[in-house]
Amino acid sequence: MLVDLLKSLNWFILCYLIVISFGYIILLIASVRDVFLRFQEIRLGDVLSMMKSEMMPSVTVLIAAYNEEKNVTESVYSALKSTYTNTFVTVINDGSTDNTLKVLMDTFALEQQPMTIPQLIKDTGKLKTYYVSKTYPNLVVIDKEHVDKSDSLNVGVNACRTPLFMTVDADTLLEPDAVSEVVFYMLTKPHAVAVGGAAYIINSCKYKDGVMLETKMPYKLIPALQACEYLRSFVINRAGWNYLGGSLSFSGAFTLFEHKAVVDIGGFDVGNPANDFEIITHLHAYKLKTDAPYQIGFTPAATAWTDVPATLKEYWHQRTNWQKGTLRSLLLHKQMFFNPRYRLVGLFGYPFFLLAETFGALVECTAYLTVILSWALGIIHWYTAVLFFIVCWLFVTSLTMATGFISFLTYDKYHRLRDLPWLLFVVTLESFGFRQFHMICRVLATFRYFIFGDGKKKK
Image 1 (cartoon, rainbow, N blue to C red):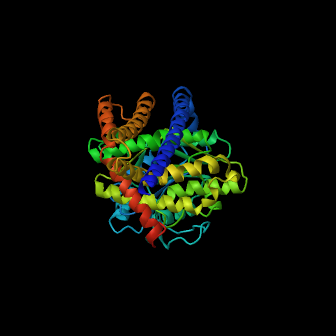
Image 2 (cartoon, rainbow, N blue to C red):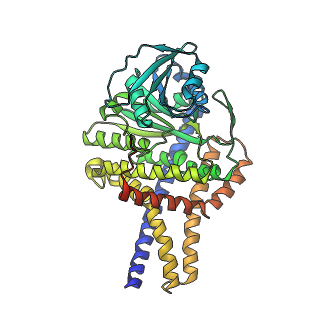
């Protein structure tokens, strides 16, 4: 009985890995064309000078901050120094218990003003004070009671007076041309409602007053391992989805939205630690259900630099929240699963994110256990078990190396050739311990989600 079960599981896992691997290869091939196209478009075209025109639509950068006294001014400065002329900045202080608000008041000479914010999105946290900077008239700070990031963004959406807005994390720096590049992409795509930009890791980089002075691969191991993930996911992988209906997830650190589209769906999901995933999935679901024309895309040309966990403990906490929030986001819109009404997103995008990106950790964990148990019971030879692990390692390593080389050949944000050997070493090392650590984190988070809760934080 056990032997038959293991044999069936082995065949299922083999078929699963073949299908999922084929999907990732398709995404890689699709991304290559899009990445090089965007690269040539920005490099050879006169895009940036055109986007400096005052005729361009206004954009509000929303920065939700909670206990970010060390980072928030850098993030605000980076947005204020954007080369995009019609840029406004709104910081929402989510009831910080540290000196976040005081730092903002001292640095930007904030002056209290009467508050007139419409309730386009209802049920937001209580607002306290509304400030406008004396030195930067395009900077607004809103102080509110603590709820969470989604609630803060909803307050920002309510306060927004521009047709477009961008969400930026308080520990994230925008490059000067980032707003111009992401707005250009949106304007060239009819009916675009959301555009994601590329997020790189700022750990180990040098910056001052919102300006990147020196960019390089993180030299500490934990951030460096995450740099491989970001190259694979937030830099290259998302570009491939442009040809497959659009990704269901962009980095919350840097995404541009059409204001009306977000208001129409009721804003960000309060209590969801993966609100960036839910908002994009929700936009897909709403637009496809109502048969409204729309596009959701990604441009690797627009760049932001974000801080990532520096320790395994911080990484575990972050990825646990992401996994639970992603599960909640997907299951909120489960009607999309293999539903032809939702077109390519329902038939390919949603199933791939659910079965590969979200439940992939469960299958991977099962694969480790079944292969080891099958070898112990003599169902497979030892060299077959070893070959299985080698093939899995080679595939993940090759995928990451390919995305790394594409990045170096195009945007080359790290600018240092000596970073390449370090990247190759980290990519090789990733599958020996760190990947398994990440897998266990996601597996336990999945069980906790289904047993103890839905991934929604208590207010």
